[in-house]
Amino acid sequence: MFEIAPSILSSDFTRLAEEIEKVKTGGANILHVDVMDGHFVPNITIGLPVVRSLRKATDMKIDCHLMIEEPSRYAVKFVEAGADMVSVHVEIDVHLQRTLTAIREAGGESGIAINPATPLVSLEEALPYADFVLLMSVNPGFGGQKFIPESVDKLRRLKRMIDERGFDTKIEIDGGIDENNIAKIVESGAEIIVAGSAVFGEGKPTEAVRNMIDAATVWV
Ligand code: DX5
Ligand code: ZN
Image (cartoon, rainbow, N blue to C red; front, side, top):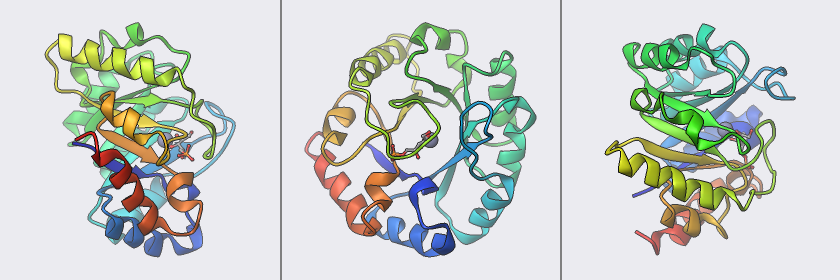
């Protein structure tokens, strides 16, 4: 099984509630929220107040992808603000095990996000504390970037690593995914598929989510 997690980064922020309804109608159950601080990544987006508003506006799962320095200071606050899933980048948190545990203790699902150039071996020790891994298939910072083709092989190796250890850690993948490459990605082991520009870019989010689900359903 797989799920589509539309990234609201590419949505029309002046009509956020409507955009959310549209992707839900299309069959999405998870909203991906990209939190950027202008330090860890070269862009600034949205934070806690928006997550609190989203929580009041929808019963969809809220998935916060923290692309920020000092994520351990904020991770639990995102759960308290209403996030169901919170991911922290392995590259920036030297106390990752503690942060992942704190997310779980606060009632959230804990995730480790990993950049394209970061080796999978860096996940090994923290994996038991993660409910999901967020595999980046672009360098984080912006929507609308091109999918890095080597990510498919990395995804397969990550799936093998999780299976070999007998874990049920889910794999989420993020960046440059559209209806042309989603089938291969789902077939390679990803269960949560983030899509920003492919969902919101053409102004027809309901249809776009449906098309992505149809394009990938051949594999499940
Ligand atoms: C990139 C973000 C992504 C982004 C995906 O830094 O983490 O979630 O919104 O956008 P697309 O699907 O357009 O690559
Ligand atoms: Zn993201």
